[in-house]
Image (cartoon, rainbow, N blue to C red):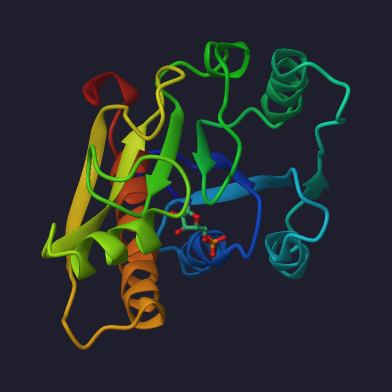
Length: 206
Ligand code: GRF
């Protein structure tokens, strides 16, 4: 429970896949470590395992695909309606693999949070961990990281940074080892960042 309110803050989590970050959120809500509740999990992919995680946690799990013929902005407006119906304080993109247009974002100003498995400004877009690993192998970087940021506009992984953590890369690493290390850090950073968002008034964030 939120210590400042008898009602826990509500989150809607958007996913597209495995949902390990969603699981970290669900677990933290369950133990009370995160003073919030997940009002719904929405996936654009039918076979996203995160939907099953939501069902197991007794959270509404909604499959909401984008029809091929539908305009992207029209889809985003419909998605915003769907999300808004759950009245979330925060919309969390936890492995949501679609860029959101302003049709969606303007409905949740300063309330959309994204997780990116790299440091600010580094490797925007998909495959960030493997691109970091390749850059390390070419001798271009010695470390990578994880960041959580707000999504105010259509920029890719570029909004105001809420939190970041450096993740070392070792010469003995395989891609799998690095991925494991990054994901472990992601789970902690996402929950910790949401925790701080949930206990401070929204006004003080930006
Ligand atoms: C995470 O690495 C996230 O940062 C990226 O996609 C991955 C999703 O993992 N955007 P999961 O679905 O939470 O396990």
